Length: 421
Image 1 (cartoon, rainbow, N blue to C red):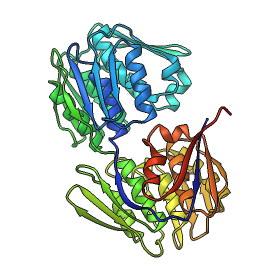
Image 2 (image 1 turned 30 degrees about the horizontal axis):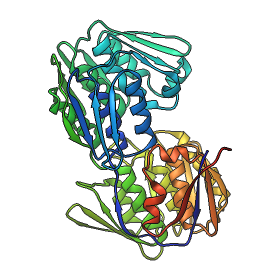
Image 3 (image 1 turned 90 degrees about the vertical axis):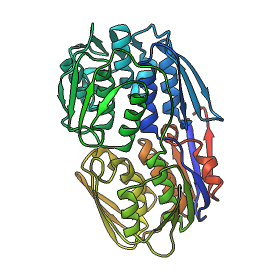
Image 4 (image 1 turned 90 degrees about the horizontal axis):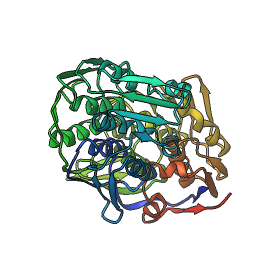
């Protein structure tokens, strides 16, 4: 068991180095398996648990992978991929396992995803991935605990995504890249991470146009080759550190090439947080009272649902009442109960939450229900009186690299513990 201990009261100051994007590197690892020869090199790789699981999964299907942690570099040789099975021991812990399916279909003619049953398929919103494979000519057999996808060859088709999911868009682009003919993906995701994956695939020899327009066209090619690519910075990691400065009344310099927080920056500015850019460095400064805010989550370029939980914590310290409307995942509000244990005042009604701020937070024992609620509780601990103990800390490690060490370097009193209980 991993847990975090946070003692509040310290304003964070200094330079925070933003990690590579989790939501870009995971599909890139899947994309690397599309190359039948050569070695793919990925740089600026975040050393997070989801990357470790992706490495395990790539090795399980026969790829040779070197993870150089100190250099934040991955080297992937997929020339000997020989197993279509994505084993349950990894797939159950790693939702991104679906991103390996296109490579296995093209390389081996089938992909067997273990540990994902019918009810899980719908609840995890992965059904449109498999429906997309069907539209491209694959056969999908769904059993109680296994999904078996088979294809002697894929053929281009017109695909429409009911929701512009970044994972779904990336997955279907990879499937279409080696399909016979032209594939059109309508209502495609617009996230910068999708564009970064498209950039890598284009380097590999894929023919993709329309990225960032919501209407992507993929002309199938015969083969893709290994390349070198640098992963973009993680907008979510950057957003969390900006909020850490805001909630502690601190001042941070965020370092990351081309770093852009988008609408999150504008919402924090509305709360009274100051931003200034100097080249690749983004300065964040917070003094005085935070103003309340209204937030409606939406797909990109709207307010990211992944940052709604951390922003709820910031709103709990604002001087007034904030309103949050969660339009993507209602499960994000699992955080409210944990914040209320710390003496916050959050009321949830369906997909809406009311956060009555300026209530001093008090440290106590809380539980991370997912990655985003976990990091939100770390923020709460930074601002709370006394000690906050966050259980299920492994979920935080899924998305943020070396979090305790990075925050301690900025003045935070935080430790990461591992116990057998």
